Amino acid sequence: MARTDLTLGELTARDHAFYGLVWASTTLTARVDRALARAHDLPLSWFEVMLWLSVQAEPVAASDLGEKTLLSRSQVSRVVDALQARGLVERMPSPTDARSVRVGLTQAGRRAFAEADATRREALAEVFDDRLDDADIEALGTVWDKLKASAPPDAPTCGASSAG
Image (cartoon, rainbow, N blue to C red):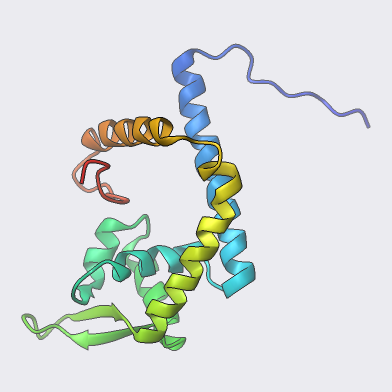
């Protein structure tokens, strides 16, 4: 069977930019997910929760994780359950609300996150870091800040502003 060369045809510059973002997100996410799964048996969704927890001074409410990540509340709960089962996070009572719990990385979780983050960096080095210079990274930061500024209030923040 002959292979058909599919094409999107002539795209406007805006359409090309949009589909480029979709392609980059899908491709880089899949690459990191495969590397984390292979090296650490750690899905990207678990890594994302651990990333947020790794930079917090104190344990946080699971609902706060749901607001910051690309995961739903139920997904965050399942991820926290799985991470807790592996000894990577712990749940503790909230000091201010007896009805809620807070989640924090354990020491083993901090070590596992550091190792996984090194794997993430290795996975992206050739296809991201080595191809983009500081001006490219700054330009991407500017683009993300503009796109995030127009996001609805309930959209996940997916990381800090490039300015902050």
